[in-house]
Amino acid sequence: MCMTIAIHSCKGGTGKTSIGINLAAAYSLLGKNVCFLDFDSKATCFFSPFDFKSKKWINDVLFDKCSIMDVINEVDEHDKTGKLHVGLSNPDISAIREISSQDRKWQAHALKMIMNAKRELVSAGMDVIILDTSPGVDFASINAVAASDFVVVLLKPVYSSLRCTENLVNGVYKLLDKPCGIVENMCHESYFLEPVPNERFGIPVLATIPCLCDVAIKTDTQIMTFEEREHPFSESMFNIAGKIMDRLE
Ligand SMILES: Nc1ncnc2c1ncn2[C@@H]1O[C@H](COP(=O)(O)OP(=O)(O)OP(=O)(O)O)[C@@H](O)[C@H]1O
Ligand SMILES: [Mg+2]
Image (tube, protein in one colour):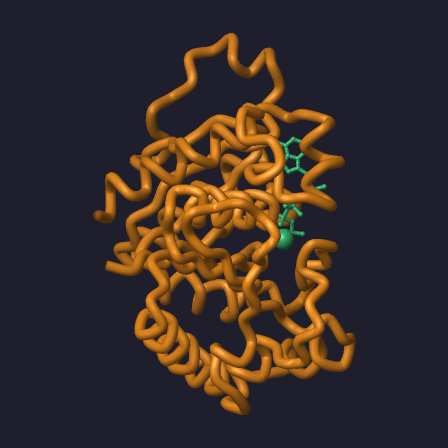
């Protein structure tokens, strides 16, 4: 069975893209055929290892101009038993404006395009599809959440992030009846002095990841799960991957 996992949060900068890419890498190291899709069309993923020459974008799939298979590229540099593919959104300002100005009716059509793309990826043999989203509850993020089998909810362990996430859990995930798990990211060491909860808002906590300066630097230019498998950040990716597989497989 193919698993589709959305990486979402109520606020920006919680680590969605970093964790989405590294979780995708962890699954490929576990032998899975993985596809990471950048559905953050408003702030697309500028990440040097993904500097592909492809001129087809997720935008083209959503506007029904091409197949998802024309968009994805394989990341083949690393020694892994599975495969990692990546599809990106168009970073041009005009493309961002075009997609941002679409109305509700267009977004309903876009959800159909996402479901078609999922079917194509499943037919192509993907085991895991990871959807990176934009923060908050705009139609594009909710489409990605609606198209997923599981949502990884990123939060920072600070009051504003906790309250905002509680709203998201009660106002979106529970209404959509979506299985999800929380990843607390960028935690301070004093935070660990308190017992780390097994769940928040009735949702399991999959991982609690410390705030580490080297992660902030390295995730900008490399896929840490490939480069440093023993690093605590990479180990968290394997833990999250295992817990989601336990829930879905
Ligand atoms: N555990 C961590 N420790 C330190 N820095 C981190 C950690 N996780 C992520 N970061 C850094 O935090 C910044 C924001 O991460 P990232 O871009 O992945 O967040 P995001 O949720 O995708 O943001 P956006 O909402 O803008 O898309 C990046 O510079 C990243 O390297
Ligand atoms: Mg991001």
